[in-house]
Image 1 (cartoon, rainbow, N blue to C red):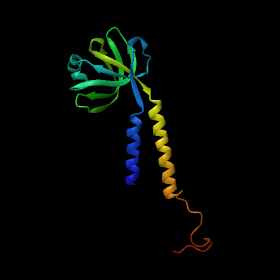
Image 2: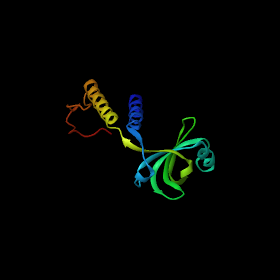
Image 3: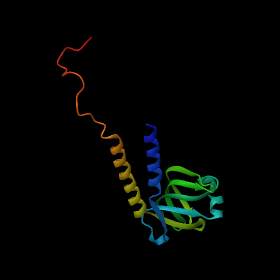
Image 4: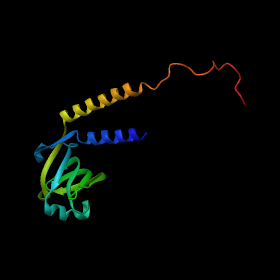
Length: 149
């Protein structure tokens, strides 16, 4: 049981690393694109009442661009200390003046292939070590007698 939990945590951690972020222009954004918006120092301070203290990166789905800024459905924020805090998709307006950089998330083909290969290796190694876990024979009699009470 403990080994399964550790393996599940490792796979989750590796899967989180299967993405790359590349810079994107505001004009190149398509709604529902997963983005990471890095805030300026002033933006972090001014948006603290809404996002929380010391937030430097807002991650989520791009909703729209207005003359006032970018509207995203926030799914996570990252603080200066490196803490990642989960959000539930609340809409947040980030004024353009507070955007230091804008990046789009893409699947990392190399990392994904490496994760798939490692997963297959672990599956076959576990199968070789423990077998299928199913028994081919039925223990005891045929079960035609009366059951004990």
